[in-house]
Length: 377
Image 1: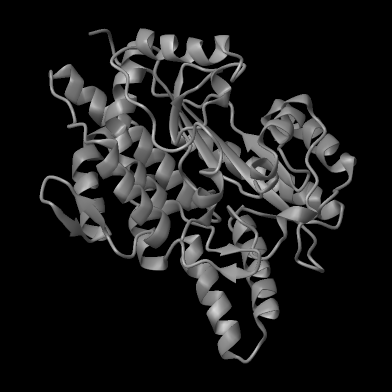
Image 2 (image 1 turned 90 degrees about the horizontal axis):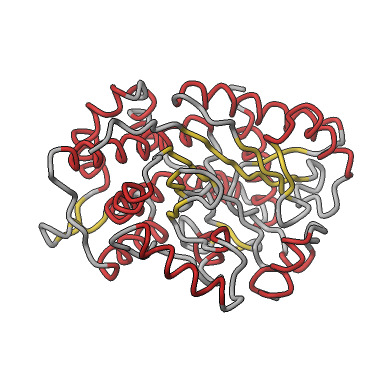
């Protein structure tokens, strides 16, 4: 086996632009907003499918601390520029009450084709996520670790949830974003392949048939990036608190190093069937960290806090080697404080208890999201 992979890190975050007066999405923000962001941040900022969205992405970072510095700069700059145009930024995977029918999509060839090909399924994509790229230069290693780390995808989703509301309704799900995104084709858990060559052969069938242009149209929860030699985590909701997102990114990076370390010793993580992992994926989507996940070896549901401590034991050596152990342990704080979904729901219920209407309560949730998104920047 060759030397240790780079395990470099890149993080992408998608935000929603809102009008602080109405608290609704900014359906048609001024073009100057994005132009100013691009002038200040260069290629680290870009438009998203909807005009009411904006995406940022770090450069290739040596470690999580560098990524954290960049993300603070990116969030702060986009928030500042939006403010000069009378708008605000929220990091949440769904807006509490916006109507998808009212949104306008960005006039860009890729997005025009997506809207044409997917119709209503694409028009409903008023959702945002966080993507984490970890550098793995060897193609076959990337494919091998993708099949193993898929087991932990529900655990990572559980920590990130920020989308309990949809069109003014408490959905009862901690991550309703997943329900919306799963309407697209080529989503969900990744398919396992024995080698990079096998993956490429399957991909080539779809490309030759004209179904997709390239690998960027594979939208699994975890995929080999089409642009970089990375394994791209896509399952998390966008975390409202920056520190929560950093904890998840560090945990994912550490899990990959742990699996590589096992492989170096001719060991591997057991691969469980998609049927079983899918059950935990649903539990994460529905309950977040509240009701636990299934431990397949024991055949029983285990509280999430216990599972997290088990993961910490697995990855501590790796998190320390990657210099992100302090950030990874912030995941305990997420459990104590609650994810963004928990905190949004608490704000909503508190306002209802005061006798305010559901509409007014949801507006207060937006105010909370605006404050939390820029906290600590």
